[in-house]
Image (cartoon, rainbow, N blue to C red; front, side, top):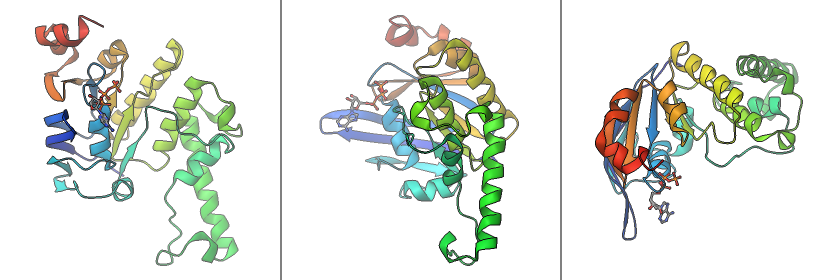
Length: 256
Ligand code: ATP
């Protein structure tokens, strides 16, 4: 999968009387890590829900490589190269780390959509073997190979977060939405996470949008930063531009 262009165009979402998003537009391009920051309740998670197809916007469009995907399901989006991680951890405690990456890969058994159970055993084993090889390569790239056989339920927070990222890229994505991937991580883990994210964008060409409360982490990693406040884009630019913007300092950085 090569990188894709993800666009939000004039997105509006209301929850009763609350305007969670009010005409939000942004673009993330292949090879780019774009940061999305803003105070609590700014609308970051709601925007992620709209981009990944969990929530239909009241107005506006989501575009993938220029095609309107606003009405496409989350599963359709995942099959077409979009992946997302969540703010709250979502691992299966009784699956091993490696198994998370094996089951996350799309079944490519062929046979006109036949499931694994309908394939002859040797064919099934060959496909299974390929998925395990890919899982092992991704775990290596994420520095998780030593944990491959461990149950996910036993992992400390930082490692569990890293497994979530590895699972999201088990099939190489074109677009990656990361919702607070650094939360609960130690300083060393954050540095490692940063390096892996850079690799995914720089070497694999992935378009990455990253929501994160750790502003220093975002500013250091992201070439471009978008600031949301009260459901609107308050500012957008390089880390230095955003830091220097007085409206951002007033609404967000000054208080954080
Ligand atoms: P945080 O940084 O705290 O995660 P956020 O920037 O992700 O915040 P959202 O969770 O998207 O912000 O919330 C945006 C606004 O929409 C807030 O005012 C929130 O209270 C409201 N909101 C979000 N989800 C719902 C919902 N399901 N029902 C009603 N209001 C909601």
